[in-house]
Image 1 (cartoon, rainbow, N blue to C red):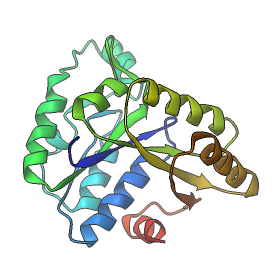
Image 2 (cartoon, one colour):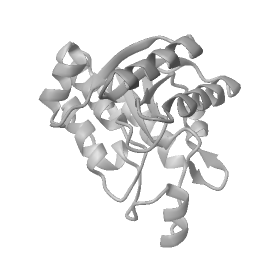
Image 3 (cartoon, rainbow, N blue to C red):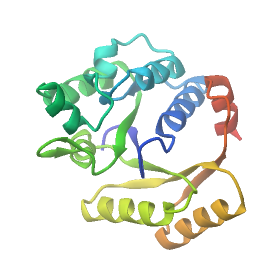
Image 4 (cartoon, rainbow, N blue to C red):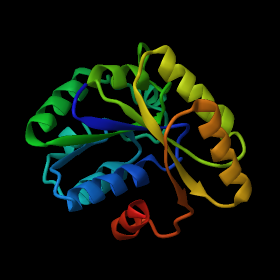
Length: 211
């Protein structure tokens, strides 16, 4: 296993960037030399920029985010619409460069673990290739129990080490109950429940994570 963590989620927009940035900022504040990576992004590089800001690094954006497609769609769909090839080797090459520069890596995935990046390379394949344990970010809204259990099942089937779960954007008692059921059924560590945050700046996120 490499020294770091891979932040995945049960879905798109579940809060992976918020959690990854918060963890990076907290670890940086604690004196750990943090490297960050968003290997694949579509539509915008804002997530990668937020990670860079949180970790306070000056790494090349093309290492932090080696694969970028301008169309806001799943990577495989964007690849086909734009007629571009995705050079998967760039992910491992950039990761290894950043590993040499930093003590600990925080890598954020795109969408969920079964998102196809190419026809024969999924996010779950990237996790295996980078040899990192994962943290699963889930929400509390209706459907989260099913989505989270499916994610956990896929990881266990593929022998991926799950460090634990972080629940994000928990708004009420019913959503809190859903998260407790997830913990009960998966028997995985629940690292925290993050409330709904209206201001997504690094300082606010860091304060919430540290709580």
